Image (cartoon, rainbow, N blue to C red):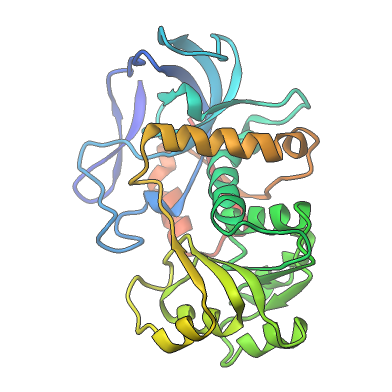
Length: 321
C-alpha cells in the first residue's frame, strides 16, 4: 500500500506493507484523513518527535475491512471514523474502542474525518476535566482551529451562558460567532482579560480551554473566576513561561494539563465512550460540524503539513489517499 512516511527531511510517499489488526483492532481502508498539529515535527516542542520510518496520522474515516477476534460492535463493511496511529496511508488499524460508526445521515467521508480528535479532545476538556455546569461562562483560547471551533459548539450545546472565542487573526475572528461564540476577543491586545471581566460583570470565566499557553497563561488566570478551571490542551504559544503563583492561589484556580500520549488504552476507550454518551445524538443530527479549509491528496502530504504549519487555515485540513 502507499503511505506518507517520515523521511530524513520530509514526508515521503512509499510502498509499505499493509498493517494487520491485532485481536482488539480493526483494519480500515482509509478514505479522507484529518490533519492535526500534533503530527508536525516539534510543533509543541521537544515532547513531539517524528521517528524516521514512521507513518503519521491520528484520525481518519473509512471502511472496515477486517476485525480482530476480540472486536465488538464493529464489523467488516461498516463506515467508521477512527482515532489511532498511522493514518497517512491507504490502510490503517485502530482499536475498536476508538472507532465510531458514521451516522446514517448522508455525512460525507471528508466530514467524518474531521470529528474524532476534535470531539474527543473537547469533550474530555470541557466535560470530564473542566466539569462545565449549565449557565457558566466558557472561553476557548485559540478558537479558530478545528478543535477550538468544536469547543465553541460543545460549550453552547451543553448550556454555557456565555461562550467566548479568541483569535489573533481578524478574518478568522470574524467567523467565530458562526460556531457559537457570543463574544470574540483578540488575545494579541494588551490587557484583553479586562474584556472577559467586563462581559461577566467582573466575575470572570468559570471555564477556560487553552490551546495557546505560553504568554497567554497568566492573562488566562486574570480572566478566570475565583474557583475557575483552566484546561491546558495545547501549547501553540510555547511550553515554558513565568507562572504567577500568587494569582493562581488567590483565585484558587484548578489548572489541568491534558494529553493523549500518556493515556492507557482503557482511558482512551473511556474518552470515546463518554463523548458518544453526551454528544452522539447531536453529531447524528448534524448539530456539531467543522468547516473544511482545504483538501489535499496523500501524494501532497508534505504540502498539506506545510499549509497547517503556516497557521493560516480555518477549521480542518483534510487529505485523501
